[in-house]
Image 1 (tube, rainbow, N blue to C red):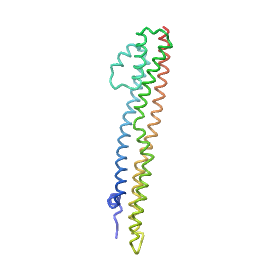
Image 2 (cartoon, rainbow, N blue to C red; image 1 turned 30 degrees about the vertical axis):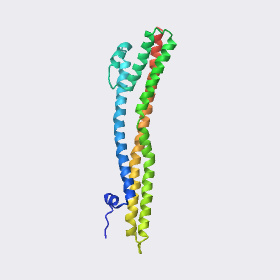
Image 3 (cartoon, helix red, strand yellow; image 1 turned 90 degrees about the vertical axis):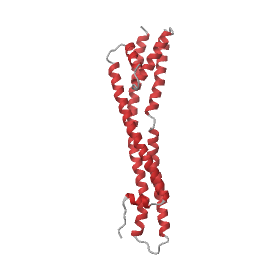
Image 4 (cartoon, helix red, strand yellow; image 1 turned 30 degrees about the horizontal axis):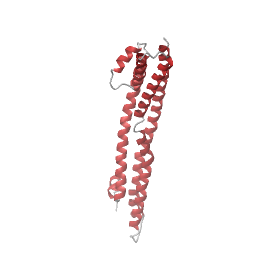
Length: 223
């Protein structure tokens, strides 16, 4: 007799623990894809926003005018928020009649560093979830496979004659869990590596801007 060995049929005929493992892996896979798409959109938005602000910043516009326009924007780029935090602290210290250039620069740098850390926390959010999915999902699928094989062999022990036709469905049902575990893990690992590289590049951009803007503020403080 021909047996239905399609993926859906194998899942439906699998034991309850294996079905629970598969359901868990499918739910995790959907969650990871949701994170992947959201991070794709957010990182692309961050990159384009930073590039637009860099062009505006280096266009020669007056810093006070730029600060006034940028500080009123909502949902700005990370570079904009770092610029605003540094400029705000610089102007606040000047209003307090702090004239020492070192104190002015240190205050602005501390404010920008704090803003930088907040931006990095936002950009790195949910990356740990992708890393966990990529590292744990294969083992969860392997657990389902081992359980399914154990269940299949227990059932075969009650048969007097065992052939390949009787062994194949049970083994195939069990191996589906490993396949789905890999299906959940591989995209998560690839996405994690790509996002980690992009975030590292963004971090370098932010740090370079902090150093360059600090040099500009240092020259302004000595005037």
